[in-house]
Length: 274
Image (cartoon, rainbow, N blue to C red; front, side, top):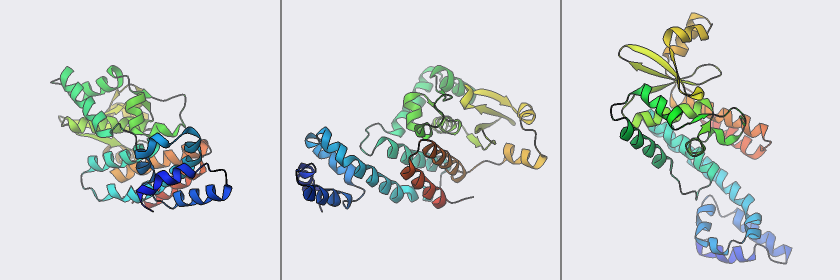
């Protein structure tokens, strides 16, 4: 089927005859992952009742789209670019393929605004700017909302999970020339900054709180080996994304969305481990 046939199918999706409706829905189901984007050109004929009938198919095609695109980020060499592309795919999946706000534009806006107000700012200034000035904060009420793992949602609604907030800090920092790393702290993802032979950590979930090396050793009462791993081993993009995907599996389980839970379970398995 080609795109030019879509108006004809849409016109028949609520036909009086069930046989016609069933055949139309079958054709739309077989259209493939481009369905949602191609339907955008015919939005003028998509009445609410037609959208209700087609939407489950659109959701299914979107899941197919994400499965097909998931390998895209895995071949990118630069860790920060890989992270942005992977999180961008999740954001686009959740918001819809025709959503017109781009992740890169939102990140660019924040970095440009920071430079405007803090031309000589550093990593500490950036943490205060994002998590106090811009009031991007941790979501403590609706914790299992799947959108909390959506970096674009974080930038628009200004709330999210620790790891998603950390990704904002890392990716805006990258645009400013800062080297902000992830820190795979158990149960609560942090970021790590190495500056002037010193190391400190930023808790993005709690208003960008700065935690110094000696303080975090008190927080993490564990064996020396585990302490060394958490403080000094930098998690790769694979590790970060697998943690994000695991959060989504949990969120979709809690919200009883089995189809998306199974989708992200499959993506977890297809994401390489370090």
